[in-house]
Image (cartoon, rainbow, N blue to C red):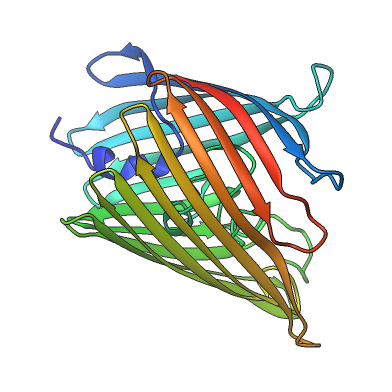
Length: 324
């Protein structure tokens, strides 16, 4: 089979998977399984934050591929997570991903529970080492078609250095006055000297009374052991009716050695009431992180957050993560 777009496009569809173990492969089909065990704890002051205490989960997934012809192949992915923060007697499982698709010479088409198009933008600064921080641009909620969402149609293709993603979230509601439908478009352009530029837009009409939209731009640059990235988001009633928001994230990482690296994140999100014009800081995080890789599977991570939001304490998160 000639070289497929699968090698170029599906890494974005399979985001968040560090590695996988091939358990089956013949001339036309392959099955890969992967997983993660995360054991962490969040420490904060007297005014304990929402993520205080135990933070643990188990995640397992499978990726499947089957060749149909020389220019067409089918793929699928399923990923399940068990949240264990409340101990062993609890029922907190969630299906993170479940989709099927076709990959061809004109791009990859998929449907199911997967990442919306604008994740192509937000992912470049959603790089926190622990499970506690990051992802503060305002995207990623269910039923807005941006982060992981269900009933999502997606198209992805790469034209040389340019990647284009488009997604459409089908309406699941039975109300004539409400809608889950949303659409997203995103692009990433990678220059040969380490600079990547990204931009995206997502729009929806949650009710008959208002439209919601968000526009994102960003850039990342890598040279030697240093990587920097920045993203900016402007939402019009995307965070809720009569609420506009502005957000940005900055990231700087330095790879000290093959096993040790350090990172600084700065995340801000401000809401504005469009009726009263009152502005409120809902996110103001400065996060210092350290990561040590014992090997490609096991790492230990630690992050300290200086929380600039009024009434919220600083906190510290320590964790170990094993992936395969």
